Amino acid sequence: MISGHFCEGEAGVRADITCYEGVPDLKSLFEEVKAGRIEALDLDCDYAFAFSDGVVVVLVRDVLGVRPLWYTVHDYCIYFSSLRGELRRRLPVSAEVKALNPRELLLFNFREREMRTVRRRFFEALSPPSDFEVAKERLRELLFDAVAKRLEQGRRVGVLFSGGVDSTLLAMICKHLGADFVCYAAGVSWSGTEAEDLRWARASAGLHGFELEEAVVRFDEVEPLVKEVLKILEEPDVVKVGVALPLLAACRLAARDVSVVFSGLGSEELFAGYERHRAAGLERLNEACLEGLLSMHERDLYRDYVVAAAQGLELRLPFLDRRLVTFALGLPAAWKLHCDIDSSGVVSKYILRLVAASVGVNEAVALRRKRAAQYGSGFDKALKKLAKQHGFKRKSDYLMALSRQL
Image (cartoon, rainbow, N blue to C red; front, side, top):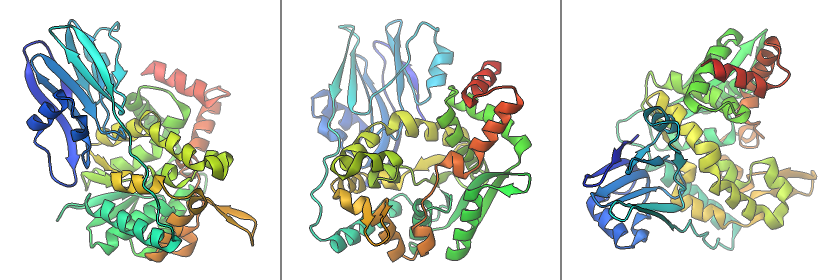
């Protein structure tokens, strides 16, 4: 994470960066950017930078927005942080804290008291191979490369694990690469019922020979966890809180043993895994995938970053590898959303599921249509029950009331 400020006359670099193919010379990178050569920022890294030479400040983050960066200008100084709440706590209420758009570079000139943004280009989709089997093999290679470059020799890593195709595929690739890893699953268990994701995680780990640790949360432990999530996220959004709950439970368990966790985040957007992709139809499918990818920094990436960071963990996202993204964006829609004429069914993430099966993922797991994290983990049901117990008809009202108490 990064945090700090620059005033006129102050020079320096603050960086939150993980690179996968060589770390850049940050001073040279700053000079390139000041000269207008912003293509120098097309790095194979997840990053957020704040540069200053005492006159000009540059704020920039990776174009997908994996690393967050918030900023505000106050008393002619520019303040920045990976965490929105840190700026809000340090500065007056009147200071407007903004998230830097990943597709923009921010330049602030102290002498001219001028701030402007420069648009950055997003990834361009590659033309796909004409043959499906060739495309499938290329996708397999890109997935292995995306995981391999995020592993470090001799360093144990965690895999956030639900027993679905995405997390099982990541774990299977780790296994093929000989990585030292452990899977972490989380879910609610009460009144003799157990979360679907816990059952699937246990079954998948057993089928594939993965080491699994489970964060089984009792119902009486849910509300304290909700309070912790609300403090981290600083917003009582029902969906964000619901997804963050199993993530926090798993990360809290993982933090005892590892400092890096892998997540399957991004797979749904790249390979059309959501209901809105089905609703878009084949003609608009890739457009819908791109739209979702462009908004991930607002909806998903900051949430998962701060939850993992609160436990001292670095989140790594192989599905958001730049080469994998450009390849997946160019795949024909019919290779992602496959209509099975024989059974009159529709298989989402079709090519990815076939790749998973080809590297040894059990067929039932490869074809599993996973429910959203808040449902599969049982936390949404628990939130409904808690809201009712506290006299609220809606989960949103319960979360709002709870957040006011914190």
